[in-house]
View 1 (cartoon, rainbow, N blue to C red):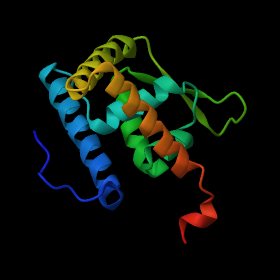
View 2 (view 1 turned 90 degrees about the horizontal axis):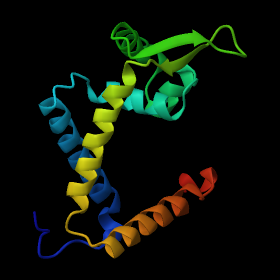
View 3 (view 1 turned 90 degrees about the vertical axis):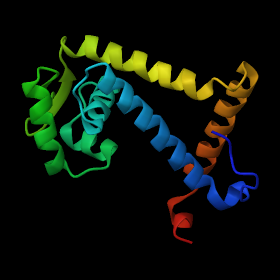
Length: 157
């Protein structure tokens, strides 16, 4: 897919371009996991990936990471637990809180999903040489670091 002949300056549509790329990557990933017979929703695999990266996190923290309300997350976690992919354990420092862990049954599924994710990334970067890929990675990181470093008070101005 080729870009239009004249694109607006990057500063005018950076967010749109990044959102559009993210959506395209997500769609491709979802199509490939469906083709592979993995019967998970986007919300399910996002939750599993966050739990994998942060085993022992609380349900409230996972809701924050997913940017959803904790009550919305409960049914999703119930489904993942019934499927044998996660378990809730008593939190070591707060008896009112559940800590989330992957089960052994989740590992092969996550391995398949990581392989599919790798395939999507390789497809997305196929037209870039290794130097361009490295540069893109560095530039995206710099852009993110710049915006994250801005004080919250400036965000509304």
